[in-house]
Image: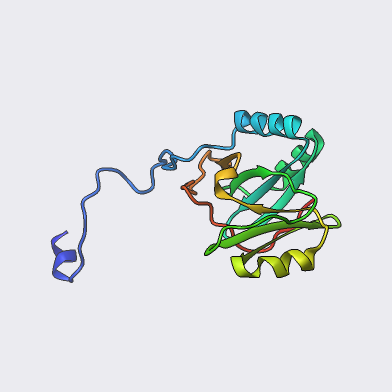
Length: 172
């Protein structure tokens, strides 16, 4: 320690080995079987939901059945944040809050797309998209979220009050 300090470093004494296995430090909800049962119940109640997988970028999936849910689960990356949102509507409509960024999800064919627009761009985007299944996401409408653990049981993403929503994703 003295030699490290003399060299201008700031060593700290550790009470444990950095090589020992430690418990996962995440306090986020884990995407365990209870979480997936809750998602299946949401699909049964609502007919369909959107599943967002975030791991720096986002991928989107429209889940309309138990088979869809199992297929989506098989594609998700460990340690990603999984958020479940209400399903798409017939088209974008209605007034949107001013002074905000709007998060829009829409479906073309079998692909799910995502973009962020300024509120003043909304009318143009809504007109361009036309009558395609779409939705404007509101953080308050997120149904449930959890972190998908990796094989060691850890999910190091922290689920905060705001989910980072970036990128364009692909669906089923």
